[in-house]
Image (cartoon, rainbow, N blue to C red; front, side, top):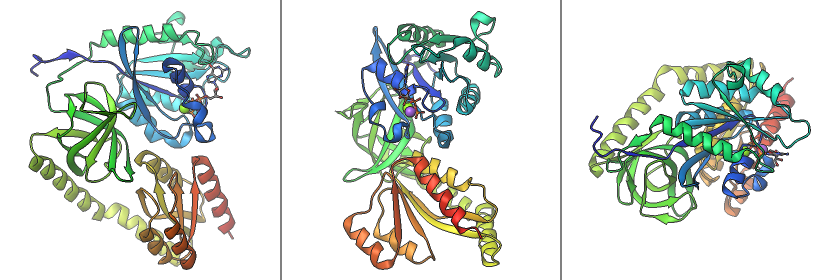
Length: 407
Ligand code: GTP
Ligand code: MG
Ligand code: NA
């Protein structure tokens, strides 16, 4: 590779760990914000990112959810990052999603720093956390291992300076560099439909500079950058190395985790996207998914299993993916959830039409609501719409419905 134009770039740091161990609170303390206080159900349900400047150094942080349903977001968070901060609550120790996060972190190959949070609590027990982590090949430096453990409190701010210093030291060791003059290459960490804007992708720039007017391709969709918003939602002309923000201008919502790449020309961007779209259509038609759906249909027809048909709509690609995976994994031998259709965006009349064509189909909306006209149509067609803002409320409700269907 020609490294003539390379310059050092800020580190991308992903925060991972078990639910409620204090990831969002820690980031709130670092950037003096209050995100955690405003979250539905007190849990993080989206991946988010922002850049902060601490003591002259820029650091891009990625916050991930700790609730068990969001495995794919954690894996994605771990895969875009340079450094991982594993948050473990000092009063709670190693928990299932701590272990899952360790695995995702190790698989990504990024260096890991353990932040033992809530050390302000009377019940805090650093040794308990260290012993628990050591069982998962995460031995602390002061126990002869190679993992840095830093006691912190998102409440009092204790230990946070030390944590930030450690991040800077780690990033210097990594010698992170990229070429700001190259055609941009970014990773889509979230994607959604916004009224009046169309598809909006949240990205982290890995190489080059993403500019308004760039021809871009992401997954099977393409377009031209119409607008860029920085991590504060402010319109900007470009996003530089390791910067995060939102891109407006893609024709459709790309799959989260896909690469968004600038191309020399609009025709090249289109060509790449269309070729990929053809391949993925061919894949969809290939045996695996079709057969299993047919098999399921046959079993249902024979009365061997019952199915609860649902149409799923969510506000963003990440939540859609998490809910789909959770619904499909509900283990129940007699009754299954059958997702007839799913997508990012509001509940539409087309969804009602599809639901009314299928017996007992319900529409599930996550952070999306039907308009008045859609509600009226649903009523007249006898279609039930259920909306939720907390993922476990949705899952608990569906589990209860399935139990009710068992004979
Ligand atoms: P998820 O994203 O849902 O997995 O949770 P999280 O890890 O982001 O934790 P969050 O920031 O939502 O904090 C969970 C709870 O712990 C909240 O009630 C916080 O106020 C509390 N909390 C977080 N950090 C600390 C801390 O350092 N000390 C004390 N005492 N409480 C804390
Ligand atoms: Mg959180
Ligand atoms: Na929480």
